[in-house]
View 1 (spheres, rainbow, N blue to C red):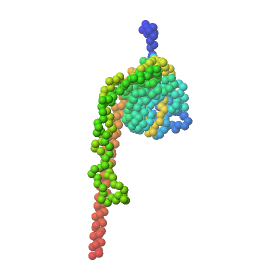
View 2 (view 1 turned 45 degrees about the horizontal axis):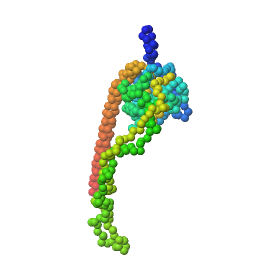
View 3 (view 1 turned 120 degrees about the horizontal axis):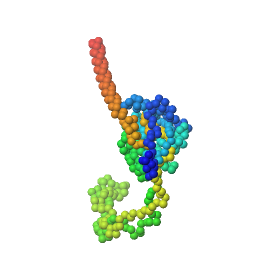
View 4 (view 1 turned 135 degrees about the horizontal axis):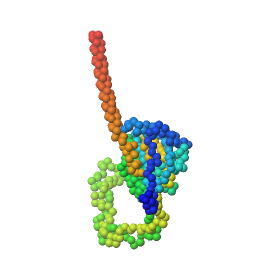
Length: 404
């Protein structure tokens, strides 16, 4: 009690560590907690529950998989509303692009309670968008987009996502000191300060509108040498008549006109003359525009904060379906999220890779056997052709014998 009283006295508010949302799709009625969007004008694809073609644990690795190509996907789930005021916000989930995705989203969105789940679509306001996005070789990144005062802000740094067929754990941590961290497979992929890596606020400093470069400011490091002069023999034509050319014997001046030798590049041509450069004695260096405090800048110590976090959704477009989403977690305990991630994802990832390697080896052997079988068939066909040729020869001999 004395410790709590002391903490209250110094203004520290203890926040209970909690997992507000955790979905592993282990319950047979998982879909009762999720709502399918019915937004008009969109042809939504269906999710199916499956561990995929390879896995570490058939039950534990079950997730929801996109099952139809060239479709929008819209599914969301609500939970007990909370605020991340004075506590971290942790968003975590796994993504498995089993289809070796060529173009499609693998991200989630976090909403407040105003989300109309039945009408969720691409323009529905959200708080955070986080996760991988792949489209061709040029786009393989992790989105981290925050809504701040009604406007969506994209991260200015590049975070490369995983683009293989295995399951990967994506974690976003937003701290109450306005810092953040992005983890992939529980290892740091990016981190920094919210104010620096997003354009939430106007710049602290701006160029002084009253300042301008002085008219006598010389920022030329070198200048033409005023003492240098052009040599007398410098100016030569760029092209000259070919001295080795001769008038063709069959050239008729009356018919062909006056003969002129063809032009060739002049070996004496030196181009445009320019005086040599020397150090500028009046050089002052590059002029730097002085800055002043931006009157429009107002610091915000609560950029990180959302008053109401209430829902998570998958609002996606996929050209080639097959992505499996699993192990959603939203909470405020960083260490607990790490432990749960290792249990949900880490405990089966090695076995899943082993199963995939074994499948690949079986496919390789099968392909070799089919190739050998195809080669054997070709040899048999050649033998048959040889036999046919021999039969034809025998028939010809018989006919010749009969004629005799």
